[in-house]
Amino acid sequence: MRGIDLVFRGAIALAALGMLACAGILLAEAAGNVLSSSRALVAHEGGQSVSLIMKSIDECLFGIILIVMGAKVLVSFVVPERAAGFPRWMQPSDIAELKTTFCQAVLVYLIVDFATDMATLDTKTDFGFLALPGCILLIALALRLMPHSSAH
Image (cartoon, rainbow, N blue to C red; front, side):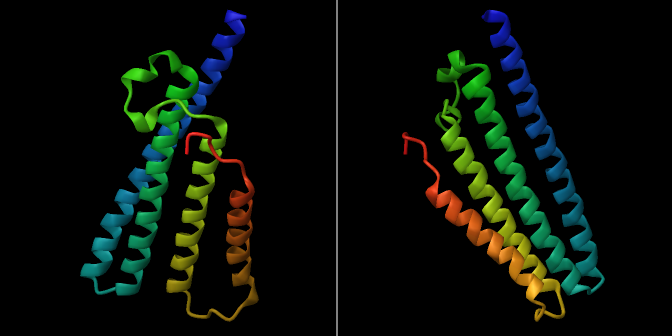
């Protein structure tokens, strides 16, 4: 059984490291957008600047969530025997808590994405724009129905 345990821990570790790598990419993208926003502001392209700032905030927020989740997955499922040495927010948790955290992050991402779209689009009368708020509502309802961690 020890070999199977190592295989699963290794696979989970790779997935968690992948989340951390994706977070790094998102944060680098956010930094590029902040620089582009600064250039747009200097060039008096206010609309472009606001859009890039909102996108940067979105990328930073999701990057932070990926870092927290990647770290939590590593501590929870790869090295749980060493969890006592990590900060409390990284202490082992269950799958329900990880799912809840991820769904909450996706909701925030979608809300900011929708707000960014609404702020930058000229015409807002197309009924297709109701699809994203509808999806946000469905995800929020699903989150409400999901079992949450017993720790909270």
